[in-house]
Image 1 (tube, one colour):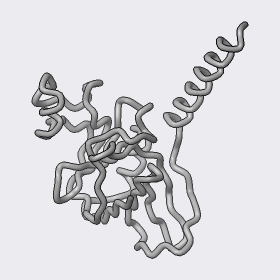
Image 2 (image 1 turned 180 degrees about the vertical axis):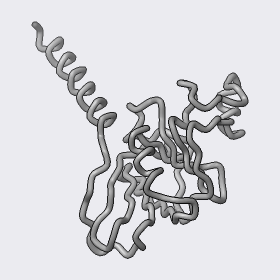
Image 3 (image 1 turned 45 degrees about the vertical axis):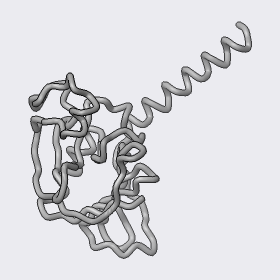
Length: 171
């Protein structure tokens, strides 16, 4: 085997391992020190591509997430204003402008629905924390501003929080 072929094969295998590791990630309990968030708060650290559910003054559940791509990121504080299982999805105007052939509504449960198995909408905009049917996208800068989670992880988080939960997004 040539060196060039060996390098290409190693790169392909390495990419496969990285992609499968991200897609198989699960929430983990982590320690937090010096954080001043109230228990129950969701904190999204865009640069880390991680979401934290604050459990107490020193602990949080950490989940991998996909976040807004360049020019689509945002920061601020909001609240969860709705919770939906297998939601239908209508692409916002910006998405329709970029992808005019996209249907006006994608039914819940469809493998083409970008919301995955559940979504929690955020007050004040067109953003949500939601699942995905493209698990390899979790961990990247991939969305129009939504916070994208593995379906198993959104299911877990969905059960832990309620409408009215504070969400803090930082860069």
